[in-house]
Image 1 (cartoon, helix red, strand yellow):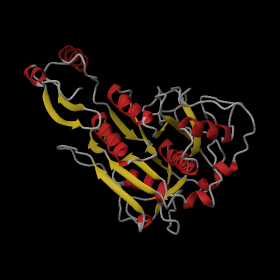
Image 2: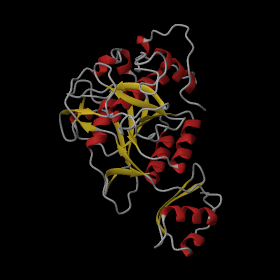
Image 3: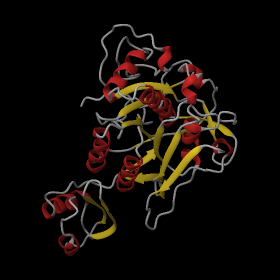
Length: 353
């Protein structure tokens, strides 16, 4: 909502202001409100919209990491042809996730910064998921869990808390996280989580998109018949599904017309929360592969538009499943740019903007 709007009306109506912050960048005030007694969420949303007609109002929806522990093999880097020069590049990458164990051996000497959003009276989530995702991105090359871009600068935002449904981040915290990464000047934001549609988060991620940042998110682990998962299903976000070492779709991956790319996400070897590594599965773990490819291309071709980068990566993707785009694999398996076999075929947009 605009920062200048008065709050006395909503307090008089019985709403408790649990958290608030004013964004100097966008001139907006973000509120996390507690409902008055005997009000449903739908009733509260309608009432608040009448009280604040110029505000964007939505349920403070929860988002969760998309991962499962598993057994499997460890050849994910080779699947996308990742070797040689990309590992030496040093883009600035953003990540929104749970906390990261910065003392893990994989991060020794790495350029890693972790921000913590304000969680009020809630306990922070564990560091298992965030540590694993961060290691896939920037894990030390000579560690037991080497990352795709060990020389990159990673700006990680810890946005998740312990909730009744497990580790989760609400839209209020995620909105703050996006703004932190915009201010940090990242080129790509890795979002290995999913949840319901939310108007506030949608608008702020679109602001990041309009500023030239590529947003990459997990397709979700709800299964083939699941509803679209967000933020991946928004048109301005690149949605990533997971495949195994034989390029078969992950059995629990969401499907739908919003899927952009497939990437390794079954039996992926990455850092455990305290030390060493473990095999992990889920669309969460596929996202860093696409993040790394896109970040590398933004460094190699800084004058290229975001859409040109996406179009070229679509042309480079290895087609899987039915010929051409399909709702299971999207445009196919993401590939390192020097593995590109695209000729003069027509390229298609994943942005829709």
